[in-house]
Image 1 (cartoon, rainbow, N blue to C red):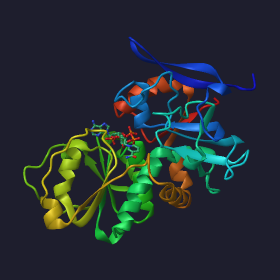
Image 2: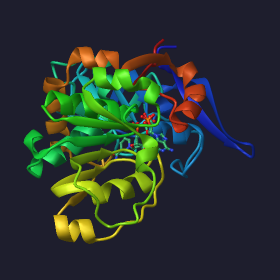
Image 3: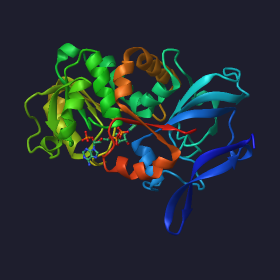
Image 4: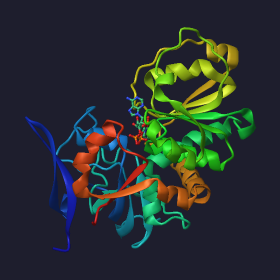
Length: 331
Ligand code: NDP
């Protein structure tokens, strides 16, 4: 039927959360002033948690996960969008508190959407997705704090992941000397090919240092790991350096001292892509569309279908996914 659409539906029972592809009806979509025919979504770390029912992120079942998507407007009650317009959605708790992008259709608020920049194809927009937006927001934080390539090397942790790999590619493009920390040294050549000049083993940065200050090593850090890794880098930040705390792939708790803040004036900036204000979001997408090399982006991506998601959810949580995973929802 014309109003039918396919989606990956999560259902909860006494045995836990299970996922299956279901045929749903237009009328089942939530409230919103724009209905979108989705082309692509992506698999992010948070999607992995949601698919596995971890972290209490989803309150109401049945649920359609997928924290980002790109597609074409199918119906609009909003003056800013017309039928056929190409739009991107990331965050706003879509895919967590509201039905998301692992589906052929979604209905959302127009105020959450960003128009697809003309330089990007729909597929490349999702190669960027939430992870790429987060990487860009971290770099905007560097730049708004005056951290320039001449200030010294910058570090990216969780380098082989989605946020990490887009961050390396962008930073190298802006002329920064990029050091990459990874637990998967066998992918070192790939990290170098996207712009890393030095590879650091994860083990070197996974213990809390005994001393509050160590030699000054990096002018900035895009940290996707958190936990002891964040604790390990803070004493090694150069004077006036900036650490963008993006993720928690290695843990949520960290222990530090105030000394690097007091004696080196370093800054710890939190990055929240989900609720990032729309103006900043549009600026970040504009920069991403202009500054991220299409060839580099294509080299970072793998494309899967809705059916592949349950298996890959476990892999992303174990840090076994490399780069960005695009979901072709119509495949
Ligand atoms: P990925 O799974 O793609 O990447 C995470 C990377 O972290 C892995 O590839 C691995 O890199 C490293 N890693 C995994 N497990 C561990 C561990 N136990 N200890 C140390 N390193 C580990 O996820 P994303 O890139 O999508 O997301 C990264 C983090 O950022 C997640 O915590 C996610 O929740 C967060 N995030 C935050 C956003 C925000 O708005 N603040 C938005 C998007 C993501 P390697 O193999 O190179 O070591």
